[in-house]
Image (cartoon, rainbow, N blue to C red; front, side, top):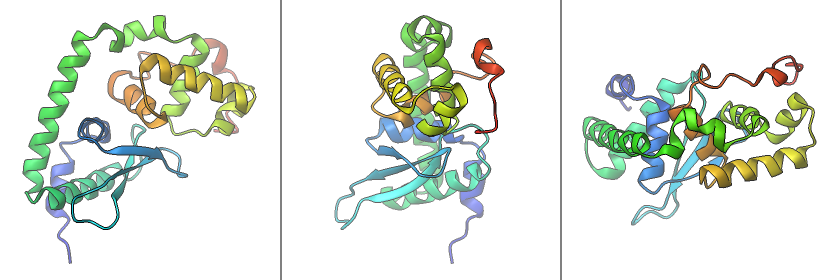
Length: 194
């Protein structure tokens, strides 16, 4: 039986956003999950028959965030052949480097995002960061699914994101909802499809 106590203690210091940042910086690929708010990360490991995979939340305050982060830390430690504390230190180091790069990169500053993305793109990117599927976004904003898809591709191009997960990670790590609340003209729309 695995003792999860150490993993959970390590996970208290790490947010899912920092974990996502670390995974993307260290060559893990991501794809959206069918479960809203999470992504599946995978990587081919030497001497492994199949890629290693695990699920990580990509939205703030995901109900099982701490447990998912602890599972990921445990998996990363086993792959690396080190302790979870070593992984946490590596993760924090990568996170600090990424934060320093983001601070020096004007295009990644939250106040500059308004000039990069249109109001509608901001609304769509925010809903993507909350794990909403294209169909849900289309219903919420009263758009066609095709229009939502076109907007998401434009957002990915503007943010230089490879996929929806990176768009969500960008929002979770550098833009808070206080910085970018849902634009006023989209606030009154029905939330029955949320």
